[in-house]
Amino acid sequence: MTENPPPDAVTLTARVTPNEGVMFQQLQEEAVLLNLDSGLYFGLDPVGTRIWNLLANGQSLPQIVSTITAEYEVDDEQCKTDLLRLLGELEAQGLVSVTR
Image (cartoon, rainbow, N blue to C red):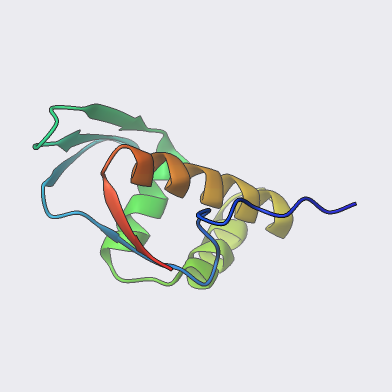
């Protein structure tokens, strides 16, 4: 039985862009995001940092999945699941805009 995502969930067809009021600071392979409006800090591990950079460069979500699976030891389905979960968290914290 396949679970259906919630109706407002981020999907691979969505367009995701970093919000303008977010500062990004990379420290070696990791990064910190700061939402200037809320004062919220959000830490990214090396994979999350790579995803953020790809988003900032205008990559589509399928392109990001392809890049991450090529660069890291992760299968396609796990990559999609982890990417969509991260994007949902970033959206909930006001760090990205999602066009569904």
